[in-house]
Amino acid sequence: MPSVSKPAARRASFRWLDRSFAVAGGMAALVSFGLFAWLIRDLVRLGMPRISWEFLTAEVADAGRSGGIGPVLVSSVLILVCCLGLAIPLGTGCALWLAEYARRGSVPARLVTGGVDLLASVPSIVFGLFGMVFFGQTLRMGFSILSGGLTLACMILPMLVRTTLSALEALPADLRPAAAGLGMTRSTTIAKVLLPAALPGIVIGVTLGIGRALSETAALIFTSGYSTRWPETLSDSGRALSVHIYDLALNVANGGPMASSSALVLLALILVVNSAAVTLSERWLLKRHQTS
Amino acid sequence: MGLLALVAGGMVLLIIGYLLTNAWPAIQAGRLGGFFTDTKWQPGSQRDPRFGVVSMLTASFLVTFLAVALALPVGLACAIFHRFYAPPVLERWNRRMLELLIGVPAVVFGFWGLMVVVPLLIRLAPGTPGQSLLAGSIVLGFMILPIITLTSQAALQAVPAAQLQAAAGLGMGRARTIWCVVLPAAKGGIGTGVLLALARAIGETMAVVLVCGNIPQIPKSLFDPVRPITSTIALEMGYATASHKALLFCAGLILVLCTALLVGWISFRRADSDPGTGGA
Image (cartoon, rainbow over all chains, first blue to last red; front, side):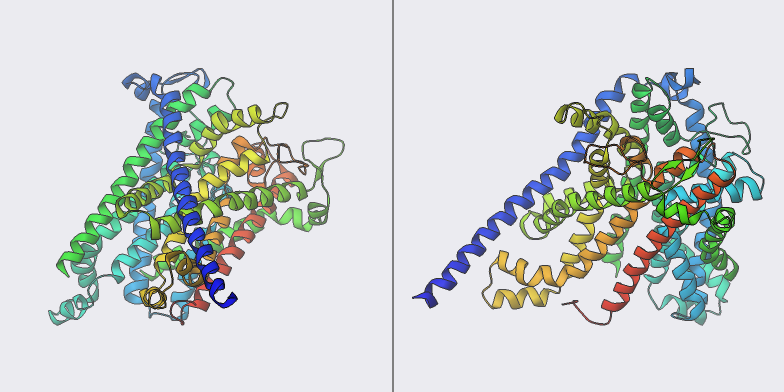
């Protein structure tokens, strides 16, 4: 009898396992979904009442307890512009070199890839330390929007390199011999054929980079600083939106309500940027799927 | 082009170089000994300045591991559910939501933790400050949950269909296929996801600085306030001078070392498992 009952018992135990996978998994999915809903609901409940055009454009008053976030938004945008101004050429150039010039698997190529991977692992607070001494002190930028933007550029660089590289590698292999057959030089091929073809991938990378840069706080505290005045030049100190939230939550008594409104604005911005990235990449993948 | 690549690839060396030069005064003065043995951190004290990083290292590791311990079971269960149980529509929307959740700024998580999780903990355990090791782990766990779920799901999806068909051919049920075939085959990928999450968690600053309580001590219970290493840098860099500053740069170096080790481990494992197919 044991030879009969043993498989039966095992089957029963796996039926039990199947059921517990379904229940536990469903609960876990529910938890992760519920968490997102909870986060959004709380932020909307705490932050929504003060959101208005006035709030988005007015000056910061009383250390942030009243007024709006106008200068903070402007500073954030300026920091982002500086960041992309350095990161896009550097990231695209590096990816182009890796994909088109370096021999795959050669020592220089592996060193550069390794360096970029390692850069991706550096914690953001360390970027802040580095930016403070390198851009702020060595390059004499002090606490400035420029210094913050450039620090962020170093931070999002690996992301740009990776997405651009994978976009270039995913291009049809016959583009390059076809361009060579038309007598195009390598630089013309890159400028007229490869870059336009890889543009969707680059755009997605940049969009993700914008999301990452907008959400960064730790790298900015010691580089772009805390000033809440309207920035006039790039060498002014300017407070990014995320730093504003951090400062209100940690250093300002009764800063909570304004912090939650700012957090809601930041979250909305990030969600828009990131859903744009997701939609773009899905649409692009679909199109490639249909044409190939 | 090569120059740009050189700049991009060499950036990390520049960063490490700058950390080292700025940390050098402390290393040269032989302060590193006390750095790792002294349990007290009182940099501002005039009479007896002490720079021991032990309590903060402990806090960093505890918060990180607790966060992973909280997030891994939930994330893995969620990934299994998505891959084998959920209808495709649900899976698609939930995956999208997780992708968006990855992008939620750490400072927003931290702020939400401060406004929601901390009061909840105070209600659960009256008499405690609320801002604690546990609060930090919960918020950090929430933050890395999408990373673990998505990487585990990718690992489950990477199991070759032939293995699933073979299991079906042997008459194995769904649960048995998952338990005996899929999970062993996907073990490597799941492990990589956990390492990624660890690297992200240990370097995280904003989420922990707002909810951990920021008292440098070795915690005796889950409800004790702690101060991880990243918070210390963020809180003290603004006013630190001389040797205090150099020691904060040392702390930064330790962080880079930790994440670099984790990333090195990940690429080592990838290189290891690449030649074989399926990883089983």
